Amino acid sequence: MTTDASWVTGDRDVTFDGVWCVFEHRSGNLVYAMQDVSFTVPAGQFVAVVGRSGHGKTTMLRILAGLQNTTKGTAYLGDEAVTGPSVQRSMVFQQDTVFPWMHVRDNVEFSLKSQGMSAAARREISDQKLEDVGLTEFADSWPRELSGGMRKRVALAAVMASGSGVWLMDEPFGSLDYFTRRSLHDLLIELWRESKMTIFFVTHDIEEALILADRVMLVRDGKLVEDIEVGLPRPRDEDVRASPEAVKLSKTILEHLGIREDEIVPELRTSEN
Image (cartoon, rainbow, N blue to C red; front, side):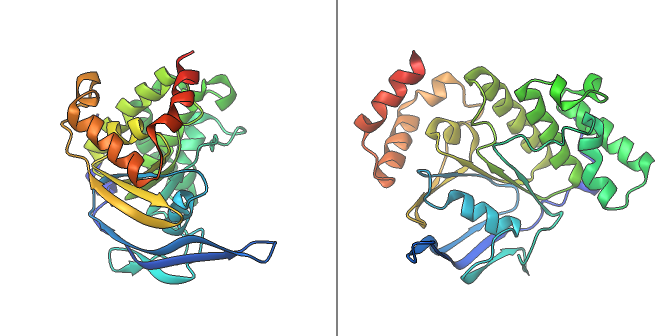
């Protein structure tokens, strides 16, 4: 795998400075989606954002993407305040975001075309990115002809092709089966190691967070309740994930999120059946 260094822009820190995001519910009550959140993420770091549903994880990504205004405080990319969407920040959603009426290659080249890039330059970049995600032979396929995992690979290729320095991923593999998720974990880690982009990866799956991230941010009731460095060695195979260090990290995360281990037993049993 190769990376076109001239097309890599992941060289600026990401900062939240006292960010609040407050909504008024239709009932008239105020919803505090973000409450005085501050952090700095160095360029090239892989961050997992973990928490229960409805506690502010997606709001954090939407603010970083420029899709949601803050009530107070500011998000920055380097010294530049985030005030709206930008090609420097790309978002990958849980739902399929490939355009069904476009062939795979056209999906990958979409952002490049919108930037006014020539057809020849677009073709060179899309060829490389499709090769990187193992989809060269499917360049002229329709998305409906691909599996769910392959469509996620198309989305990853499109994000890489866009030149974004920050990837914002909102439970992108949540709808996939275990084996497909694991293969995409391996691919994502490989792409990240090659590109050194900054990644914010939202998940409610603690194991997924510990497989992928350098750092885990725990969000609860719109607050950043803990910020944990993940010092587990890579690659994080089964032995690493079963190590005392990994088990301790999992328990720490559960405690900070206010979740007892016995609460997740029924879910684990269901997933094993």
